[in-house]
Amino acid sequence: MSKEYSYLSVDQFLQGYQVLTDGDIRRLVGVCYSLRNVYRLQLEPKDLMQEALTRIIGSDRRIPEDVSLVVGIANVIKSIANDLVNSASNRSWQLEVVSDEIDGDMPNVLVFSASPEDELLEEQEVAAVSEKVKAIFLFFEHDAEVLSLLRSITKGLKAKDIVKDTFGGSQGKYDTTRKRLMRGIAKMKVEGAEI
Image 1 (cartoon, helix red, strand yellow):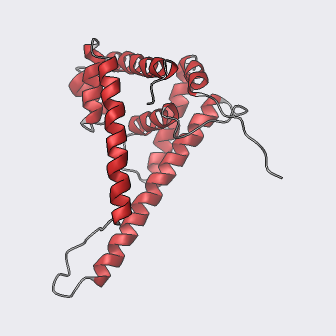
Image 2 (cartoon, rainbow, N blue to C red):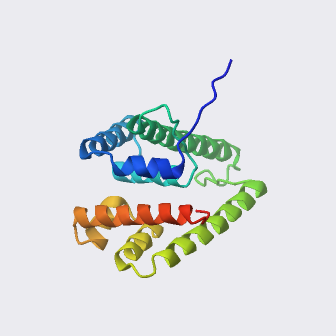
């Protein structure tokens, strides 16, 4: 007998997230630190947290209604960390297999080859993400700070580098700008944008 789950909508999540205490946020960042260390991830804890929030808002990960928000977010963080470990382990294994098959003339060359289907899916995902990013940039065209944050994120900068380089070391400015970004994305979703 399986249990049917009801999940929080993005709006419900955002409303709940906005009322989390600083202590709740510190606990979640602590979970990120712990998982980074346990899984030996090459990722800053704040980046792991940001990835979890992005996936929840993007509806890629959902939180059951009958679970506290902090526990639900912590589970999403753990799931993402696990995915990162499995993905890295899988790629590493594939590289080892391919390297064993390489001709003896090229013993130090490793090749990772994706299937044509994987490459096509990746191209489609990139195109879809590109359209969503454009929509977000247009929505924030009059907010220079959010645009700076978005540019830094799209350049692949880590959270600590964004604070240092984009916001002159001001963690508070980074946090308030990130919250404006999150609220704006929530508003876009309410207005029917597919993000």
